[in-house]
Structure formats: structure tokens, C-alpha cells
Length: 261
Image 1: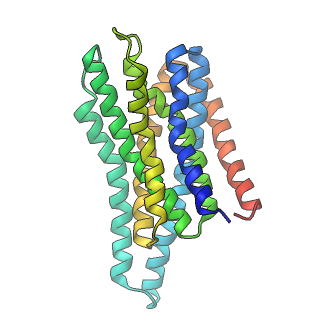
Image 2: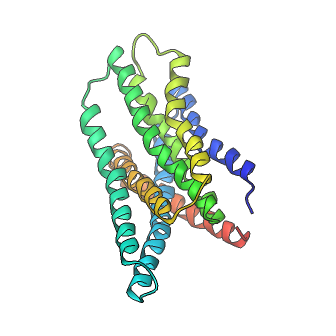
Image 3: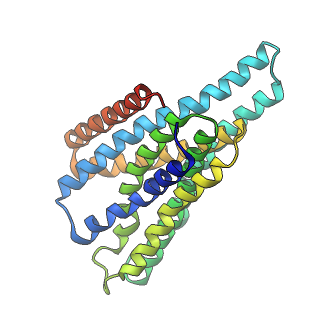
């Protein structure tokens, strides 16, 4: 069983892996290495999307089955369906709106720092939902899912560091380390705070909503990362990395299950 202190520690790790993207942006790595790392992260995210929605759908489907058998409320079943699809819309279409609203700027100088900050705020918003999903999983007793979410979101946040700092690469003057730390904190810290909030209570409705919001956001980020990566690094490299990432996701889940979590 995962202790509460351990959950908070792991939630912090999941959030602040976003800082691992900092040295790569500052000091650089070979382009193909960066592309391969991103592809591995995409594979992990694909597994995570399946895992997140399978848990949300299991609860939603169970409510509908109970209602059809006369042992549950039809109103509750309908509410669960609304929350599932509503959360998906918030997570997926909300980031579509964010991209259209804020990503059309041309980075350069002060505009680059503003763009970096807006990306951090957008990523922080969906990282809050991810943290809530971790906390809700813990509160519901689904310790295995909580650990899988922490591993997946931790890998995910590592790649998000690239997105936050990318507009600042090559700008003059060079951004201060304090600013880089600030935008990365804004992007990553909500995972930790969401973990705390989500762990304080459990409700099936909140569980469904938080998971579906996180799942929708992950779909958006995964599609964007894949589209960009395939153009830059080619199909072969991307598919090899995705295969490794998917394998890592399934093996991680298997280890968690065999461990009795």
C-alpha cells in the first residue's frame, strides 16, 4: 500500500521532472537523440491514454449497467456519461482553444518570454488535472493506477520542458536562469498541488471527470508531439521510439500489478 507521504513525494517527482528538459535546451543534444527521446515519451503517453480512459470508462459503464438492472440511478449514470465526455472536451478542445488563442505569436525578444510564459500556464493547467487524477486514484484505493500515472506523467513532464523553453532558444538577450526556473515551476508544480487536492476526498464523479480531462489533454499533447516529430525525424525513428515507450508502459503496469499494488 502506498503511504500518503510517499504519494506526495512521488507527486512532486512527477511534476518536477519538467526541469529535466532544462539542460537539454541550454546545452543541447543531438537532434536525433532528442527526437528518439520524444518518441519514447509518445509511446508511454499512448499507453497512458488507454490506461486512463479504461479506468474512467469502467466506472462510467458500471453505473450504466447498474441503472439498466434497476439497482442504480439512471440520473447518476447519465451524469457520469456527461462528465466523461465533458472532461474529454475540456482536456482536448480546451488546449485547441489555447493553441489558437496564444500560439500564433512570433517569438523573438520580449514576445518569446511572453510566449514561453503562456505555454507554461497552459501546460500547468492540464498538469493540475493530471495531479488531481493521481490523487483521486489514491483516494479511491487504486494505488496501482496512481503509480502508473506518476510514471507516465513524469515522463510526459520531462518532454514538456522542451516546449516551454523552446521559444527562448537563440533569443537575445539570453533568458535569465531565474526566469527559466519560474516558467518551469509554473508548468510542473500543479501536478504536485493537484495530487494533494485530489487525495483529500474521493467521489466517482470527480474521479471520472479528472481522468477524462487528463486523458483529453494527453491526446492533444501526444498528437502534437507525433506530428512535429514525424516531420523532423522521420517515420522509422519515431516508430522505434514509440514501440519502446509502449513496451515500457505495459511492463511498468505489469510490475505494479505483480507487486500487489
